[in-house]
Image (tube, rainbow, N blue to C red; front, top):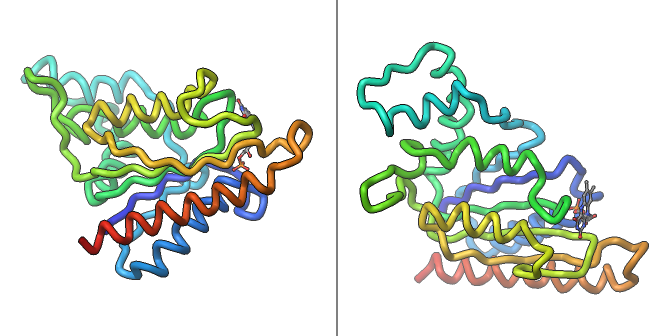
Length: 214
Ligand SMILES: Cc1cc2nc3c(=O)[nH]c(=O)nc-3n(C[C@H](O)[C@H](O)[C@H](O)COP(=O)(O)O)c2cc1C
C-alpha cells in the first residue's frame, strides 16, 4: 500500500486534534502493516501557491489548442503542481488531515486541490468526461471541528467539497473519522468525542490493513 498523506494544520500534534487523529491512524496502520509506503506533505511546510493565470494557461491551453507552447513563466508556474501530481500518482490511498475552518477546508488545502486537480496531471479530458490518470481508489479524511455536526450536515461544506472534487476524478470511496465538539467553551464532552474519533481512525486503519492483505 502506498499512501499520500496531505496535512493542512499549522499547529503541533500536541495542540491539534486532527493531527492526533492522524497519529492514531498511522500508528495503528504501521503496526498492522509495516510495509506501508508513506509520503507526507505538510502544506504549512510546502505551501501551495495561489492559482495564477500562468498556471491556468499551462494546464488548460493544451485542452483547447493543440498548437499551444508554454512560455517560460507558464512552465515555472506549474512546478508545484507537477511535483505534487507525481506524488499523487504513486499513491493508491489518499489521506487528508485538516481542521474545519469556516465550515470548510483550510485555504491551503483548497489551494493544493486547485494545483493538482488539473487536466494532464491527474485526469485527462475526453469526449466522455474526465478519465483518471492516477491509481487512488480510497480516500481517508481525518477532521476535527469545534461544533457538533458531521459529514452531510447542511453546515458541512468540507466533506461536500472533498467528495465532489475527488469524485470528479473517480475517487468515490471516502472514509471519515471526525472529532466534533472540540470547542470546550460550548461543549463539555469534547474528550469523549475525541476518544470516539480516535477509535474510528484506528478502525479505518484496521480496515485498510485487512484490505491490503486480501
Ligand atoms: C479560523 C478558524 C475557523 C473555525 N471555523 C470553525 C467552523 O466553521 N466550524 C467548527 O465547528 N469549528 C470551527 N473552528 C474550530 C476548529 O475546527 C476546532 O478548534 C478544531 O478542533 C480544530 O482542529 P485542530 O485541533 O486539529 O486544529 C474554527 C477554528 C479556527 C481557528
